[in-house]
Length: 416
Image (tube, rainbow, N blue to C red; front, side):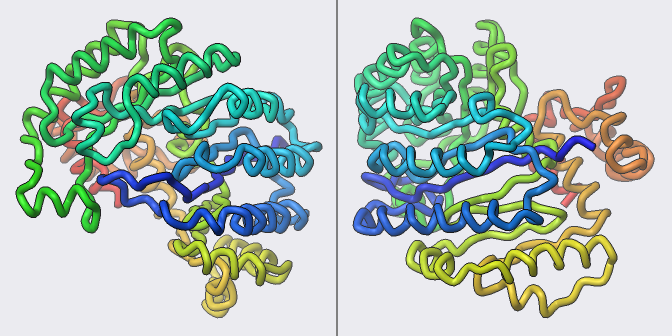
């Protein structure tokens, strides 16, 4: 039997400066911890792969290095992590050179030498955090680069030989105009060569962030929702007219350049998260690491084979519908259990995740995975959402309507 696909996410929580909108676990004042943090990351990798039972039935197909700003730290640390993974994956069904390996980089944090080292380490996909081409907006959201920095980084990446590059943009920023979005889009689309992937995220104002404080103090004004939606539809139409496939709420790609790592998550495939605050999903158990760097480092030093065995036992007990709560207590000092899924939970989540994709949930794939027909299983939810013109049934697919794209949160709530 073919092994199940597995993704690996590695969290590098260090930044030069934290952006005003960011509520991710990242720090701009803990550079002194980089070396011992990377050592803890390698310890966690070793414990996953040295326990043969843990990942023996999995085939790693994607690796994603995110943050924070992974490109901010010395490239040697990234190389050490990837070299360790390459050694651990010698018997993997997918050869290491064929695994999709992505690293997030910020303009101004890489040079030609660093990019060449990434390329040599078999990184084959870059995700560059631009957000906007407008200098005044970059300053207002706490970004420390300029559009010129981005162009230099982008051109260097192409010069080094990276041919799969994502560019991040944002809409819904305070003081952002529709003209700003038009200018940013046309500047990015006009790059030679053009990016293979463009992600466009709406600003979400998270409690406790600098931008939330500025809005609360009336120093910045939150964007009108209708204007933000107009921006979204302008982005969608423009990118589609320029050969990009809209394959997920916020993501557009040239043909066959979709992010495999993210698609696998939306298809409910499993993954392990390495590093502080990283989340994992294995055998119906969702768990995470401590959000504090120092606590994460301490916990990794405590990690032992018994902890791994306990996770395996917990998974077995879920399958047998006989969860032992004391196992959660045993795992808690190392991994924080977030959810132990029942079969019903998995079916609902499959719908929720699948409805992020523009093609929607494939009915035949759902039946193949869970036997049940989702049309019958979720008939009440679907009847309601179809009647409200938020979902439609299109042959073998259940998908969002145009109205559903604007009100996707309402759709997803039905499957929580």
